[in-house]
Image (cartoon, rainbow, N blue to C red; front, side):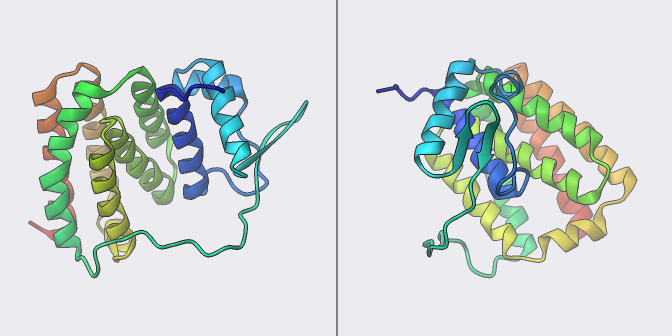
Length: 224
């Protein structure tokens, strides 16, 4: 039996998050083991083990000589995850300002090299994004990656509740209306500063950078 490692979990999380977000679609081909290994900074053996687990769970199918493909989801009821009801954008911003700067402190302490590689990938893709949807996807992916890099399941679930609350509001349309080219450039620079502080394991700088970023987002979205 293969022992589960943090690297295996990182690969599984990356692939399943990509499937949920639509980055990897049903019947679509996943990157090669080598590409995933290099992108996430993990051994190829960890990628192979993670894909084996996903295959046994019916998430992907591996075809020798061809590659690994996302399986069509089965039509079965899924229990909904609990989410706060009718949270307003203002309430969501209050929660983010309360949680995420402290979350950044923990990430600066606990993040590993695979987390740093994922931060870099989110930054690179966000810089290259040529549409609002693409930039928003990688913006959200970066914040999600920071939460996961705490390696604290309670903290990750708490951040997940905030994310699910955003999905129930008009957050996306509000963000779209507020995002000018100038504001996007500010966000991009702030993302770079946050990641630099995390990779330097500078707890104070990471907290300050994330707090400043969220304060700008709140001002742009809510006018305060």
